[in-house]
View (tube, helix red, strand yellow):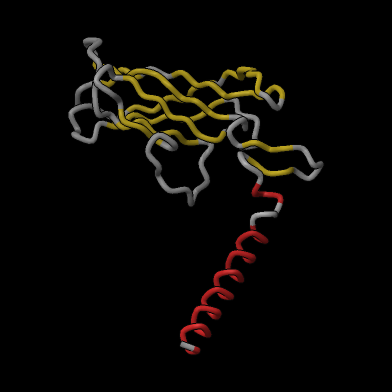
Length: 158
């Protein structure tokens, strides 16, 4: 009986210690719900941070939408950044449309590079250097700017 009480006391103490460690870690400035506090004490909310939204349509020479074409974005990516579906690239749907939504970064962009690739090799790859448009959006923390890129591709048969 005495051994089981000691055993449960040790387990209880370890559990309490772990809880204190996790609670202590959660009080740092980066752990506010939805964002972190910046250097000046203002809330940086990643849900409201500037986003880069690239969208468009991919068709063939006859104007027919192409499904399954890989459209990737460059010019904002870090060299070591992994390919993430819908963040760095996306595949066109049955209407030939694609949308890529990612964090815009801190640089002021004037254009980004979009590359459409047919993984079946029926159509030749196409690259577009697309200009960006800044769109002001009101949020509960004030205004932010999204970076909008629209680029339509017309792929040619090989």
